[in-house]
Amino acid sequence: MVGGPRDRGPAPRGGPRAALGLVDRPTAVKGTPFLLIPWFSTARLKALRDDLVATVAEIRNGRLPRSAEPRPLPAAFQGLGLLLASFLAVTGLAMFFGMAADGAMRPVVGALKEAHEAAAPLMWAYLVIHPALGILHQRVGHHSLSRMFRVG
Image 1: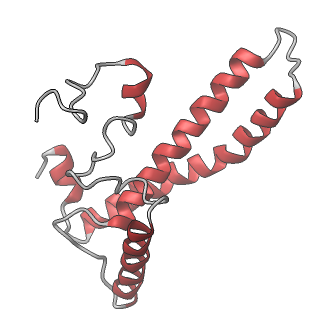
Image 2 (image 1 turned 90 degrees about the vertical axis):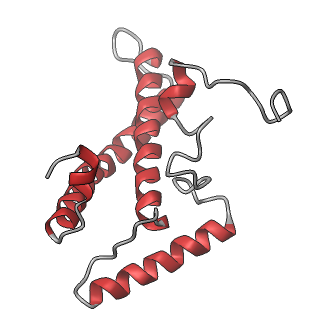
């Protein structure tokens, strides 16, 4: 129904809401609601747990899981990366605007700095693991990178 309570018109372009992409578009993975952020639903957490168990079973059998449909585990991993990058961006901005010219910080900004520094290595690990898994899937014949970049 056009103009109903759920119709908010076209999505706004640009701005902080578009930067996160999760605010207006939780169906970013082929229309599956909140697949990227399953943490607040017992059904999605169960699906994630089941997918994790199935993935471990496949790996034990010497295979990587393959599916034409979006799966909870890779989507949740992607969502964790988005949340981590967003957290680092917000805490980095807080440090930028909350630090005095001489480098002095109020205690709350100092706490945000500590949290930022604790999360940064996790982002580096994500930036290594995520493409490595993509390359691994490509090498075993899943053609995920070929489809993504329209090559080969």
